[in-house]
Length: 306
Image 1 (cartoon, rainbow, N blue to C red):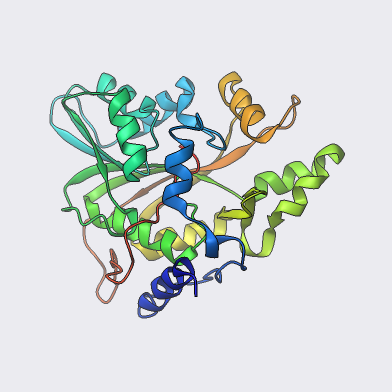
Image 2 (cartoon, rainbow, N blue to C red):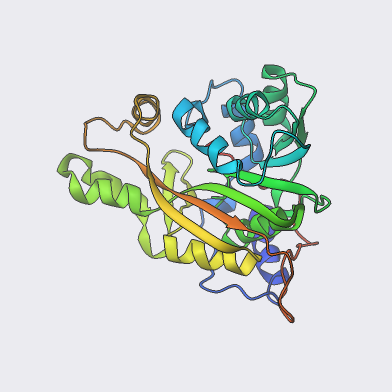
């Protein structure tokens, strides 16, 4: 049996004692089963010059929106720590954050090849890039905020949930999660609304929230619906949850959508779920949060987008 399939099965089995509502079953053969995620994304963040990598953090308007959201927990007069799991390699957001907050330090994590490329782009005393598995970060609970941008979308639902529990565990009490999550409704919407884009519906498995982002490799991402994502975040231990639609309609993001997905036209706009949530100061009796999966191997954190 392929080891990637065994990894997903192990992750799901190890989480059976932690409630997981509406768990998406493993993907079919030829998709997640044979997908070397680390090798795939290391290559695209390096030699292939961002092929298939849709980078929203290139957009200055979005970066400033994220900075404004972080001001809820980060003040300029005291040291603060921000975690960016699945950071990608362009280092745009990290540069924006250290320029905006003079006493902020950042830990940005991803696959080894990806963080190596990021560290070559940004050398800053308050930014550290490290190769870590988002499902089991193993960090102390002392981060004021975590920024998750299009990085919780691997083809294994159990792994994605482990990522969010691991991020939750790294936050201090009342720590803030700011997240941008792709949703399966966006490619579905585009395919339903525009006749010439109807072919995209063949790439959508709506019932399992899967989108085939590379037809040649037959690889898929899980792009959550709002209701399932809300439930997953609450199971991970977050509360004070807020969610809105973010339309990727700036000139920069339209250009990225054209480059990566071939989207053209004024009305054909991608959209995502922009989320904020808090780690509670105290945990309700009997509620388990921040559960780590000790059996999970250390190579899955799909940075297909950044």
